[in-house]
Length: 270
Ligand SMILES: Nc1ncnc2c1ncn2[C@@H]1O[C@H](COP(=O)(O)OP(=O)(O)OP(=O)(O)O)[C@@H](O)[C@H]1O
Image: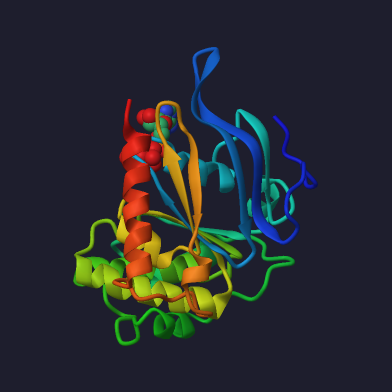
């Protein structure tokens, strides 16, 4: 396994760069590969959405970026260095589908949790002010609420605020809005785009929704299964305005969604 700061021909300015990446889980004496031959460049400040059939390795890919799992082979750099370096610098924030808020801490206490468990903050930017995060995520007025007094959408907002507290340069989001109704999800999608623009964070966002992937992504990474691989990286930047926005129902976006659907169908076939 190589994890080199200057690996291969990585595009400079890439927040995440992978070449020939093989990822999977150790299985007895050997390894169970999940994805192989992954080449990827996510520009700094980019927004990559990730689609693929269930079990193809979307979450596993995020785990490798976050340094929670070592690759089996190939090279990956995160912010120009090995993933472990980005992790040690707290450059990576993570939001999952089931955000685990501590039930005995109120909204403010949950957002500020990383300050308690954070350890030294040498060479780290000042954390964001909680009140600013509350305002940014539409949570002003809910600071003293307990998690069981929040809706699902509000809980996910708290989880995102908590992930943003230490100003990570990369935000990994694993189906964060998967359990929400469509209208709430649409609203949170718009809030995510505004947040992304405002903070300049590089975002990797796993979703099962083709519409969400097309609406949010500057690029959509489509993974296939059997064998697990990158099927296509669809570039939507030419179809979006300078704020990364588009009309969900515009014919060109609908056409991209249809293309993504065909890719997914082909990539799911055994
Ligand atoms: N800790 C683990 N040990 C061994 N195998 C695992 C582990 N976690 C996941 N896997 C396997 O790795 C493969 C990829 O899992 P992963 O969770 O990355 O898929 P996914 O694309 O995110 O799936 P979904 O869309 O259903 O969430 C699956 O076959 C899964 O069973």
